[in-house]
Image (cartoon, rainbow, N blue to C red; front, side):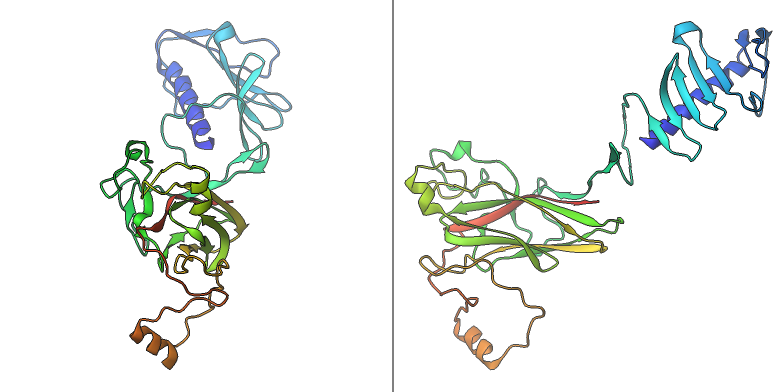
Length: 334
C-alpha cells in the first residue's frame, strides 16, 4: 500500500510538471499574502525545480484542476503532507514519514509488504503454500502425489463424485511406516509461526492416529476408526469404494513461538499398529538417533517389526487398505 501511495504522489507531481511545460495553461502559485495571486498565462515554461513556501506558520498548497473536480497537494504548517479533494483527505504522510491512505486502493500488480497492520494490529504474512496441484512435491522427503479421482483410484459407483483435490501421498501411497518431511525457509523476521494443513484419513483405519510435528516437536494428533463411520452409513470419498471416509479433510491450524530462519514440517501415522492393538498417539520422538544395538540389528535381519512403547504389535493394514494424504500445507509468520 505504501508503494502504491508513493506512485500516486509521483504521478500527481508529474501532472504538475506537465502543466508547467504545457502551452496556454493558467498556473497559480500561492504566496504568503492573504490575497490570491492573479493567474498568469504562460506560453512555455521550463523548470528544473519548484519551491512553494507559504512562509512561517502558513500552509503551502498546490491546486490541480478547477472547482469541485480539483485536487490539492498541501504541506501544512506542522510539516505534514496530504493530497485531498475539497475537505476530504485521500493520502497523507506525517512529519515522521508514516503514510496513511484514506480511500480505497486498487492494485493492478503485485504488492510486497514487509508488515501489514489492520486497525493497529499485526497481520499474518504467508511465507509458503504447498498445494501439490502441479503433480509434484519438491523438497519433501517422500514426494508422491495423487488425487482421489485419478487413474489409481478404484472404480465404484461413487467414483465420479470423489475429490479431485491434489494431495501429498494418498491412496496406496502413504500408509504404515511412512513419514514425509520438508525444511522451509522462514528467514523473514518474526516472533510466531502459524502452521496450517489438511489431513486426509483414507479407507480402513481402525483407531490408529495421525500426527504432525514442527522441528521434531509434536503439535497435532488425531485418531480415526472407519468402522464407526461405516456402521452409520458414511460416504466413499477416496480409495476403496466399500469403505466410507469419516475424516477425509481434517484441518490443522497451530500457532507457536518461533524466530528461527528455518522450520521442519513432518507428517506421519501409527498405521504400523494393527487392528485390536492398544494405541497411544503418538510415541515420543528421540532427541537423537541412537547407535543400532545388536538386538535391533538382529530384529532387522529377521524382519521383526518393533512397535513404540505403549503399543502392542498386530497385523498392520497395507497402504491400499488404509492410507493418508496431506494437502494445502501453509506457513505464516508474524
